[in-house]
Image (cartoon, rainbow, N blue to C red; front, side, top):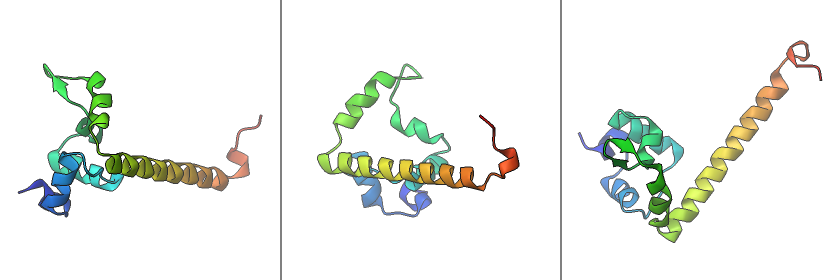
Length: 102
């Protein structure tokens, strides 16, 4: 079964991601990782001698098109906003008796 089919998307979209013209949403990253049976962060590493080479990651980002870089920044910013909003909502729902006194 093709990765695109397993992720519920088109082969052209997967191809655009592969060549660096598009950057996937967090949801798509999760779908791709699940389909490949790996942890999502491993999609961003290049292995050398069987070990992830973190030094190569900045080089890979440099290879992205300007449009893909802008899309990456937007998606990361949106994800951070969701996390911050969720964290503040969770903080507001904690009963006063459970909040730490300072």
